[in-house]
Image (cartoon, rainbow, N blue to C red; front, side, top):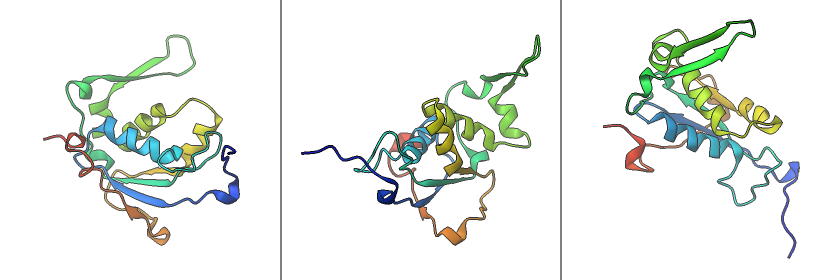
Length: 152
């Protein structure tokens, strides 16, 4: 038998929409990263963009367990003494709460050129509306997959 290696003609991309309301952030990010990478498909090929296009809505209503709301996100401006930080709670209550979900998914993927290409297939929206109705996205119900995916 020969090992199957997918070509661009073999790739079948779907559009899925996930409602993040009440879902634990890390579990959501792991499921989305798997979908973006395409590891849920039997024809998975590591060096190809096999994954689906993922739309996440209600990103501002995502849940964090323990004291993770008070943990910081750090970044550096590139200037001397330019380290900055914000807590996840500050970001979720700020102008762009979808950045918490975006960063969580980004950090679940490997740090290479392919993962930067995969991140273009992710769309995150703070509210319940999204402009991708023309693609007929399928609804992926993450809440019913496992009881631990939601926070009580």
